[in-house]
Length: 311
Image (cartoon, rainbow, N blue to C red; front, top):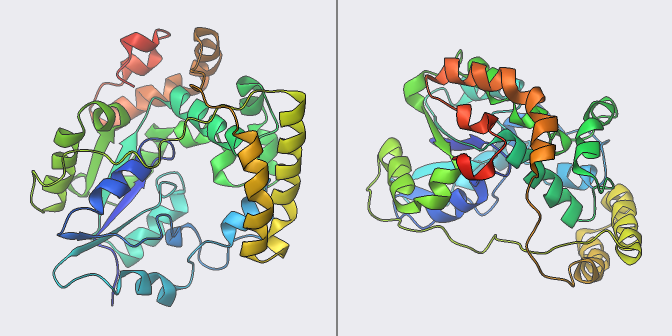
């Protein structure tokens, strides 16, 4: 039976793709090419409804156990097997599924300032042409309506950042010594030291990984112009119906639209003090809970000054 020894379980837009890319380079670890199999997010087929592009994403879920185990079959003898699905922390039911099937698995969780994480999440979907709200705060206010319409977890800009309640639930299923908490900023500012912490936690050689691959860095900047609104409208329409067509046809239709949408390169905007002030009330209570649950201090996330925060 080939099941994972460790899981990168959270959180979206906090460096999980970079961490996955780095760990692939360790000779004592095996991570399959499928970065987010999402196996523990459901007991069966994923839903056939959702927001723009959701159904296409659901089609990528590896939900059959035999197919999930097959992902790890190529692992070399003695290598630790792992995978990265950053939504596992957010999905409380996934905690129970993981506990039932891989109770001894080690969990690696990257946390990021929840306002910055939400903004990066919104930017990701905006740049992909799927987010229709040009205003970040308006997109956050739309969350409850989108939940009611069964949009996928990636649209839950606020909910995904409530780490305190998520970890409180997780720690009832997994002992703390099986969970490694890291900060996004640590991985970004001190990659070698942070990767050594991960390797030490997993029980493999340290000093092997010293940097984070940069392949996943995307600097496309999408202005809210009339032409771009038209392009994004076409991409959202394709996201709603694309699951009905073969993947090669979907990619052939989507590629030129994204090329046009991404024709301008530039730095992405960061959160403003006004945006932070508007969103912090959603997170303040949970940040306090996070400190209680973990025994660590995350008060810097309550600051309006981005330079004063470790993020």
